[in-house]
Image 1 (cartoon, rainbow, N blue to C red):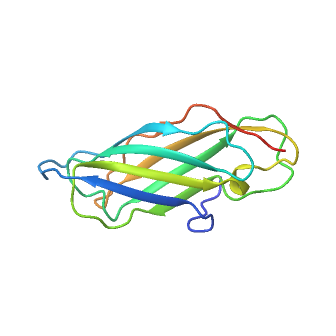
Image 2 (cartoon, rainbow, N blue to C red; image 1 turned 180 degrees about the vertical axis):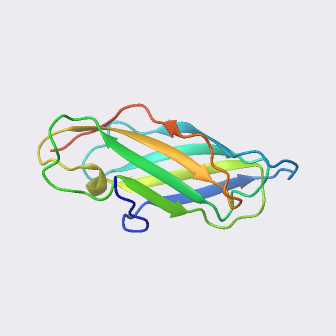
Length: 144
């Protein structure tokens, strides 16, 4: 897998909720929703919740890893399988939400063949503490 930060137009939006800073444990993330199947002219939309008792997730990194489940290799490469994006700076908080979006063109790799993907996600806070890696359910990409 290649590390390709900032080369794929992945969008990460953060919503925050108020909380105290009272611990230095690692951040936690969970998938709240994910759209599947994904059709042509749409995009993958993943909503994740985070908890960071240290309040240091602001300014950290968010990592997504794409795994293709189809047996045939893709006929064209649609970008790297690992994407690391900086987490924007936001007020110190213990919990909130991420919205992670990938365009259809990044998801599809084989012309006129549907695809199945699994994504893995992790967050690394500004202090270098990483969340556990979580995996999505299978995501079906419908290719016209």
